[in-house]
Image (spheres, rainbow, N blue to C red):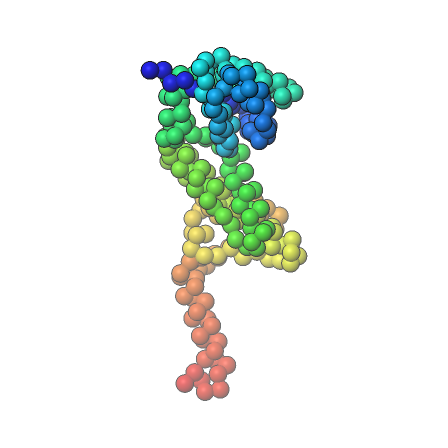
Length: 241
């Protein structure tokens, strides 16, 4: 039996992020679905709106016909939109496509621009909850990339680029609040040459310092503790006893 449904919309394969976001604004409007319902072309409808896609799932006696009507109506509501950006799948093809989407086989992989949006979202959250970064969007994107079968080297590069950009964004935000200051990068994470590079290139022009004669992690911490202990012994009236 052929399922009486159709999928109409724009995914990352057929339309830019800007175009998909414009179509997403239509998902909150009653038209043109209300007119198609009243005319009897559509009996049920739902909309999927994510960063990867904006698509309508509709049911009806003639799903392919109804899907084409919906595509034309949606394109007409956005000046400059090309109907070719909206794809129509009906019957078995629609069911097969929805199953691929459900199991993550049609996930988005947009590269550096996607990383940039993740950082911006994290940075916006940091402004409402000061000095905290929410990396959940990054992890969701990485899971999508894994399911899409991307190379581990590309996943690692995106991971480091996101951490580097988020760290640098936090530094810039702090300097905006307190004014010009030297920036000291320390901690075991800065033993990672790739991460260090990603942060430094985004802090170009600032007075940035890195550990050079001691390790940035536990080794440097241990040395610092020893220095503090020695200073206390030197200044203590009892000589530390």
